Length: 159
Image (cartoon, rainbow, N blue to C red; front, side, top):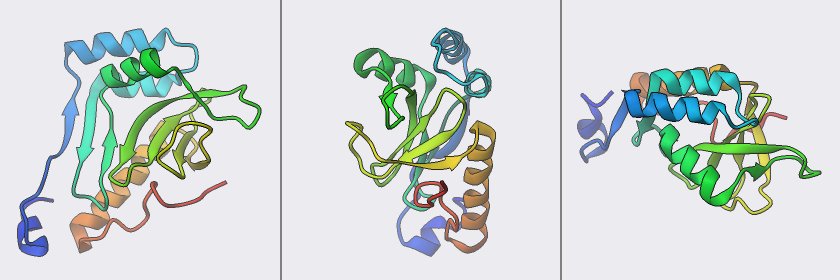
């Protein structure tokens, strides 16, 4: 992806990597599993992947390290994702435009419409972590092929 980046865009690429989980990430994933609102596939993801940083794909895609997810949960609590405030989710990442990705307890991934997490307005972007990662993968593949991310989980509205 970065081979032709500077030639195409006129500036060097930023950080673009999928970092494998280390022992600290795996320990944090086990701790995350203790939170009742965490989908099992998110814990499985964090047991293998430390984080995703694609600063140059579209506006950027970032899946936060599990340690950061735990720290945000401890410091700020879960995010209300239901209209009745009975459902909560975890902020797991963001795009380069300041919008957050939130994993709901059933595994659904949402994106905020604004940068605020106080009473957020949400759009469903994927039914589960696997579908979310597949959407990211398609955006990366299109970016590599034509220089544009195409479908972006950060801007699409589904449901």
